[in-house]
Image 1 (cartoon, rainbow, N blue to C red):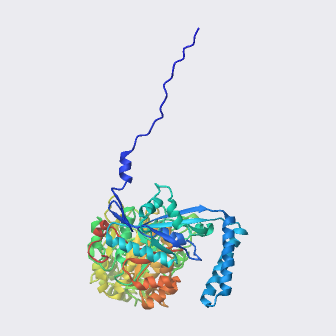
Image 2 (cartoon, rainbow, N blue to C red; image 1 turned 30 degrees about the vertical axis):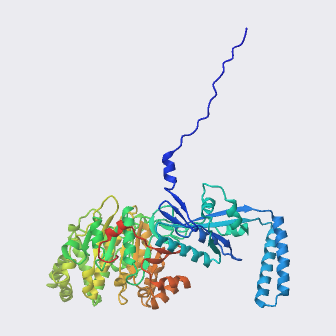
Image 3 (tube, one colour; image 1 turned 90 degrees about the vertical axis):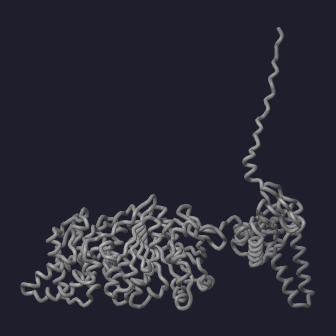
Length: 639
């Protein structure tokens, strides 16, 4: 029987279809080459080649070339035979030694001797240390959309390459071949290799970090600024680890250098990330921004719409061990409970029930409040006031064991209640004269001009929220026209309210902005500054952060307050130093150990430019703010 063999059809390989959409994206609209330039679609370009390198190079020298803004850089590397190179170098060394011996000109003799020494060093690297050498070629193409910008880019590239002691030149009549050599879609061009290749040790190439990019990137966070090389600075301000232990900011600089714009840019970025923002605004610069974000703008001395009742007992935050954690100016960490117990004759407690109640701790804040408001109080008047406060709270059902976490603002006494109680006591008893004198001192708080600020229930609420965070602006502009005792007392009252909101929820990020922070400084009565120092130290425990903004570091470094003020400048992990001069520049340079180049940056006082210290790293940054953010900022400052 015969066998029938069926002929199988030949299977043709699948040929992928041409992706015209992709080709349209990556293919330029048009290419045109001239003697000394080219056009790629709507862009103008010119290709340069490096034809000379310095005898000595610094670390990362190539990265400075590859990161020139608005340029495309191509680097070629081809290993060569070491033996042939050593032979050529040996011949060159002998030749240079002969030139040196026969030279009559001292300059020619020094140059020849230097060339011979450099040749011997390279021979040592290659022969004894086994270092690889190769032929390196570098081509650079500046690109821009218009002639003016293009000329600017070309000058910048030429200047940067010259600073590195390299030399580059345009490649005339070979712009097409140079473009092919530079383009990743073409093989290397032999003609261009013959022009550009130079012998370089591999350590020079690798040590140049040619693939190192400019900028700073945490891998998370938001766009912060640009560095001088045009690289993006991406910062996660809530990152922990290494040299970054907190999220606090300090921003310093003369008026008009861009501090307000920078902090508003940060506020908008944090708001979009869901951070709760509180701003103490003494110059009414944040009102438009607050309204544009749907926040709550409060006149901090505006009566019923913006009142914080100092007599309202606030729930105590708990520290990481579950103990009550309050801030007391002038009292060291761990000493608060002992101090308050002695002041109010509270019994000592042991075991799990130990710790101070809300009332006892709040009375310590009230003691500071009255000392700021009436510095002339005598010891007897203070004792009578403490006794009256305890009795007043008992009349409102608040004792040492009361938990006030569920109470409303209207459930607490106000100063008119305290004034009425003291007046009642002034009519009878052996201490009536002391009560009568105290009633006169408290008249303004209860019924006089200052009652408009403090006498009444608390009325400030959180800023209105959207999909992002929330913002509350406490406008203290009108406070600047009041007397010193009212000013420092209200600032302390505002800070206690802010601390309650920072420490209320460990899971909620809260950023407190203290603009023009120097206004909170009183060298004679430093309690507000001490309270602020304690907040900077402890905010990280509650996922909070503070931003201290001022003009001069000298405001915080006077001898009487330096022990408190310097902490506000040292502790923050994020420091933005903007333009300044004179004595302030000297103090800033001494405080942060600035180099001459960093001091020159601050002395230039360029608007929007700053020295950014993030942890241990230092960057020269420029705040390039998007237009959509500028639209939110309003017209009051920071434009």
